[in-house]
Amino acid sequence: MADDAELTRWVVHGERLIYDNRWIRLGMADVEIPGGERFEHHVVHLGRAAIAVVVDEQDRVLLMWRHRFVFDRWGWELPGGLVEADEDSMATAVREVEEETGYRAKQVEHLVSYQPMAGMVDSEHILFLMRGAELVGKPEGEVEADRIEWVPMAEIPDMIARGDIWTSGTLIGLLQAQQRLNGQGRG
Image (cartoon, rainbow, N blue to C red; front, top):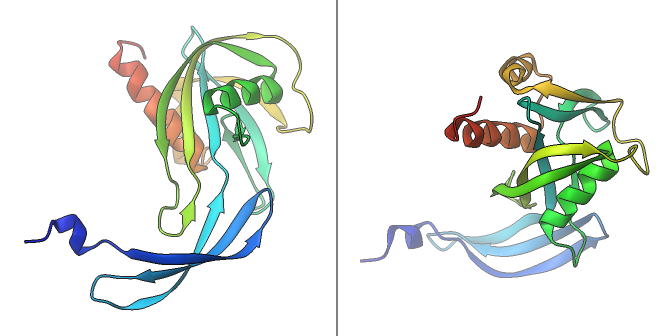
């Protein structure tokens, strides 16, 4: 008898490229679903993203107030960015925190990795928990945020309920960090 996982596995017969640049690659996959039906399915490939939950000794998290033009919406987000081709994701997270906020983390550990839209988008997000940070300068490069603030972790659930925190990386990162920190007797 076949393994249950094999009963629902899609078979990919190939993928042809439709569009490609440094930000996005769009493909058309030739897939076959259980039961034998075969068709083309769009696939979006995005770069890996590294995101950081920076928590200080006072149980506050470093957040950035940002506007997202696609949705014309403001919200609090964690610092992060795309992982360069030959860069370690942890190094990306550390670099992005410093570039976007001016802070340098003291301790860094992997928190969780996930795919935000697994049905047709390949966009791995790697989240890190950073404990402690020191201000080493001003944010560099393009303006990433209107405000950068240390927010008490205790305020996060209300901010989520109000819709002030709404992006997937920030939601997952904060919830995972709270769970990890609470499991270690903090919070």
